Length: 130
Figure 1: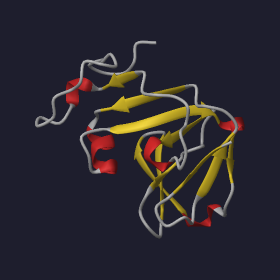
Figure 2 (figure 1 turned 135 degrees about the vertical axis):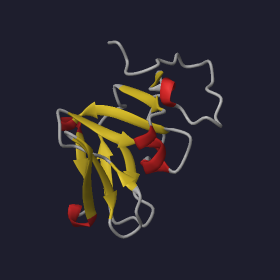
Figure 3 (figure 1 turned 45 degrees about the vertical axis):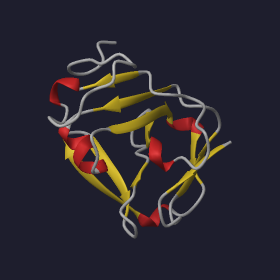
Figure 4 (figure 1 turned 60 degrees about the horizontal axis):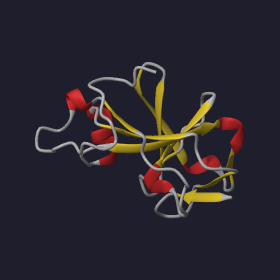
């Protein structure tokens, strides 16, 4: 099992296997929610994800139509969003090695002006074409 949690430990989860993919996102919303140059997110089928503590500490915010950001109401940490077929897990929430590394960068066209994007992994101006 691969485990994860929020900063205060109120929200805990596990996944049964490594995520199918991990991406770096440079969009302004991901920058704002992380307070950093980009967000890093792992994706796994929701049926392979399990909460291991009460989800009562989770608050949700719909940042754009159909896209929910979830966070712990106690510490403010970003936590997984499992509202669709694929769970979107903030990579910083993993407590152990998720077994996957970022495979691509998306929304490089809207990156922070003060940040130079690395050449690896491949970067797309908008969303992944696949």
